[in-house]
Amino acid sequence: MSNQNEFFVIKAKENGVNVIGLTRGSDTRFHHSEKLDKGEVMIAQFTEHTSAVKIRGKALIQTSHGIMDTEE
Image (tube, rainbow, N blue to C red; front, side, top):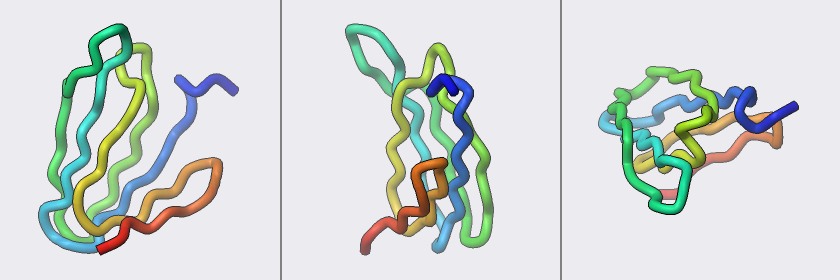
């Protein structure tokens, strides 16, 4: 499975969790952001434009590699 087809799930454990998409290429830049409130779930995937995702705030992240919990 290509990384570009891989889905991941983010569940906010508090209000105001920021999910920020970062671009591919020689210059990494922010290209998209979402704000989640407590209990909201976002299902996302890596694309030809998105190479990384930065998450700020308390959240659970589920990927094919396992479940991660952000620290306080």
